[in-house]
Structure formats: C-alpha cells, structure tokens
Image (cartoon, rainbow, N blue to C red; front, side, top):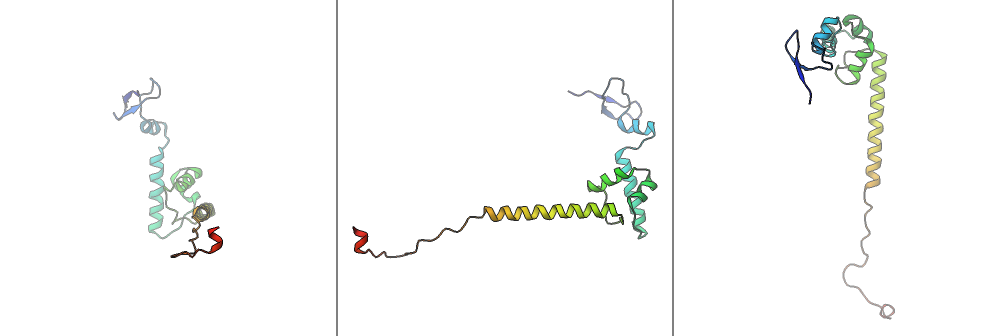
Length: 140
C-alpha cells in the first residue's frame, strides 16, 4: 500500500519515492528550474496557437527555440498526438505523417485480405430440387 505525504511547499498529497522526499514532482521541478512535461506541452501549444493566429507555419526547431523544450520532446508530443500538426512546415513532421499514413494503409490492406480469406465460400445447392426421378440403375 502506498503512503501519501503532503508536499512541504504546496501541500498537495503525493506518493514519496523515498522517506527524505518532501516535495511533489511539480514543486521539485520548479525548484530545480526544470519544467514539468505538462507545462512544456502547454508552452508548445500556446506558442503554436499564437503563430497559427498570425497565419504562420512553424518547424520543430522554431517551437524548441521559442519554448525551451528540446526537439525530441516536441517530436514526441507530435507523435503521441498531443500537438496538432496542421501548423507545421517541417520535413520531420511530414516524414512522420507519411510513415503513419503508410502504416495505416498497410493495416487496412491486411485487414481486408484477412476478411477475404475468412469469408465462407458459398455452398453449392443440390441440383435436383423438387421431385427426384429414380432410374432403374439407381434402384439396384
């Protein structure tokens, strides 16, 4: 069972990893000068919205330089769908989108081929519907 401890700075309850830990992750990050992931995401979104309102396209490097969020983190946000790609004019983002679309099309083709294989072949109906005429050969 996890033990929850109140943060010494903000009072929020958190699960301490060690008994010496007195600050929650948010307060620890702000005390060390680093930014939490949620704050980094919000900074990126805000910057992109500002430029989008001006009708300007951005690159991953632009977002990184303006927000202080590393390029790889910005790309991870894009790959996880946390940031819209509509405002980007970046070859890395386009390459990611093309790769994702190819994978989606490949999955759809595989699903269609599996569905075709799983379809039952129509059973042949018996030919002689109705009265059956016996011949002398059948009786023997």
